[in-house]
Length: 112
Image (cartoon, rainbow, N blue to C red; front, side, top):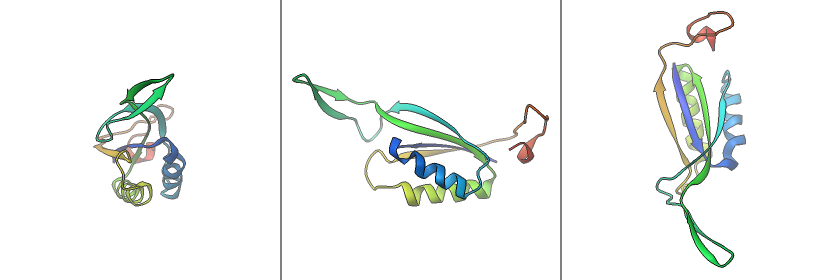
């Protein structure tokens, strides 16, 4: 099993959710986050003063899937979400050794 942390532009959330639904993902957690990377932020003017904003709002979607589905999700996100510009996001992939459903005590993929 793999844990995917998908960090994308805020406006791409619906696209990622559609991909997860298409891949029969069993669920996801969504968080509003802020960060910076190669994009380096942007300059804005407020009441005549120029400000540099280097923490950009992003969305983080976390999901756990079996290895085949995780590979499919990664491929689809890279194909459909990419604009070719800085700030498109990243996908972090972690190995998951076990999952436990608290309600029933099930372990492994059956707990997803």
